[in-house]
Image (cartoon, rainbow, N blue to C red; front, side):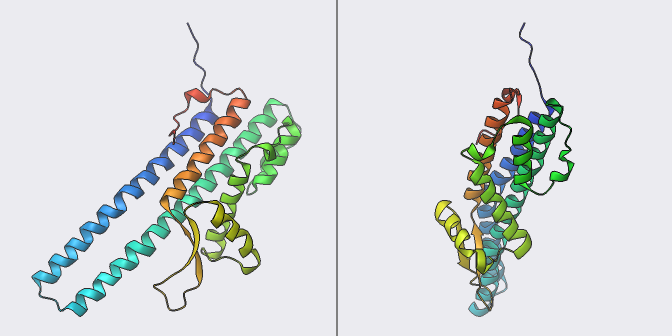
Length: 226
């Protein structure tokens, strides 16, 4: 009889990604339907109350702001933050696991908040250099996008704008656009829901590869298989 192995780290990581993948799909499918319902409801209200075109146009523009800017922007920003958090916490958990297996005397508890610190700790205790992983750069870029969102509300620092423009060329669905619904349209980070899905896929593949190398039972995880 074949004995099935389970590992808490694999289970937790795969389930977090499974939930985020489901959230991405829900947002992608729901926003167009909600927009259609609200625009139909506005049209029916305007016809029922005999609005003039000017009043209807103003209310319709409010829906433009909601569905063409505010809602998709907030949704994508939230997903990027959650994806980055998943990478950070699960990589730290992996570092702690490796340190325990190698009976390392160093303490990884001070590694919070930095992917590179986790990377250096893993290399020190196990010899594995994540810089050699093809997806490490993607995870670092994801962290940079998260920092722009959290610390600068999506508006890039002019001193680092060149790097962001490189990422915009590299990742489909990541761009710098002016907000057309504000008085001063400064360039802001724009991220599509589909690009969030692509980042989620890269994260999934990264952890599957990492866990496979560590001989963890990857096949038992509830992976989204993006």
